[in-house]
Amino acid sequence: MYTRMNQRHLTSSQRSRFVEAVLELKRVGGYDKYVITHGKYFAADGESGLRVAHMAPTFFPWHRRFLLQFEADLQMFDPGVTIPYWDWTYDNAQSSSLWGPDFMGGNGRDSDGQVMTGPFAYQTGDWPINYGVTQEKYLTRNLGRPDRPIVLPTKAELDNALAMPVYDVAPWNSAPSTKGFRNKIEGWTVSDTKGGYLHNRVHQWVGGHMIGGTSPNDPVFWMHHAFLDLVWIRWQRLHPKSAYLPSMPLSAKDPEHGRVISSNELMPPWNEKPSDYFDHRPFYRYEES
View: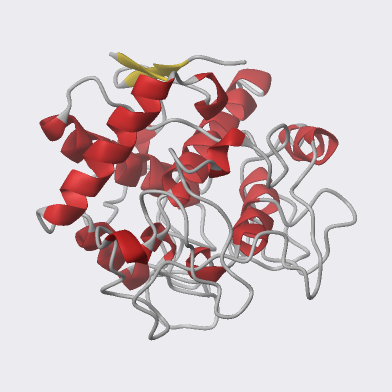
């Protein structure tokens, strides 16, 4: 059992240790497997076949398992390192210490989006982009998307989503009409007027390599998804009688049959069940503040 902390409460030493473990994983060739895996399982509604990482009920358990594996790899280099979380409802400005030169580094430059500061800047030689949806070999960001400005989700918007009592509903995808908690949080609708468009809006706000299936190229990905993991825990506390859905395999007549995974079906690439990861407490706890 270990503890994940709010990134804003990390000491200088804790920030440095997390960064160094991430860089070391990259140096030995272990980091890019996470970029590749996320890209492989980034299937959309319009594609055929199984959806597990996104636009499906397994969004939360799949990413929990993904983060646990990444965390275990970091702990091979430093057993005291855990993934911090980024509460974007609070640390919602470019001036946040999150973007400091000793941690994630800052925004991309205007000309090409290239991140020029911090340990993940290409000019240091430690963070080449080897697998991406675009050709840049350097990490890119476009914080706040100045050409079409957006803001990070607010606490009120998050609370609105947390109040939803049902985990997910048919058709189990990203349709704006779908009223489940999972789809509300994941947020693929283009509107942000009624508390929707949360997880995805954060990716869009960071911009650059955080957009698209290979978003783990930006290490802030892990802190974003650690907070989403905590959000799921908060929802479970608020709705203790509400369970993951669908609880049973879909009928062969269901148009989503073979496309989404129920509680006890096997979830690739680990061939473990979503239900194996409904409870975080065997693995870690959060320091909430």
